[in-house]
Amino acid sequence: MDGHRNGVVPLAVLPGRDAPPRPDDYAATARLFKALADPVRVKLLALVSQAPDGEACFCDLADEFDMPQSSLSHHLKILVRAGLLSRERRGTWSWYQVQSEPLEIMSGLLRPGGPFLGEPGTGS
Image 1 (spheres, rainbow, N blue to C red):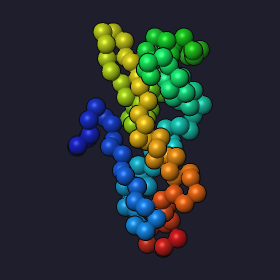
Image 2 (cartoon, helix red, strand yellow):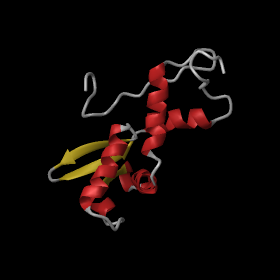
Image 3 (cartoon, one colour):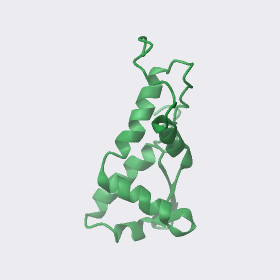
Image 4 (cartoon, one colour):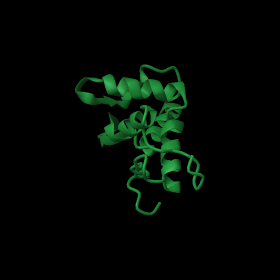
């Protein structure tokens, strides 16, 4: 992936209401919401955000789910690629932290008067 670090797609900064969105803005926005379109991933994001010191170890997260480690790793990978979580390897374990920028973008989209997200070229 060109220009992407650790497989993470950089987030587009969405334009304001007066500027028309770029096609990449739609994809970046949809990627954020799609990453949270699964109850396991919503719970993972909540657990990491509530963790002491603002970070959670995979070992602690695994204790919260009745699923194979490979499945949990897959869900975490989706959140990392969407930019919602960052990951740091420490020895044999991965530690995760919530990234605030994508949450701020999502919050701005849901707030009344948020960015214009009409269909390209239609003005609506």
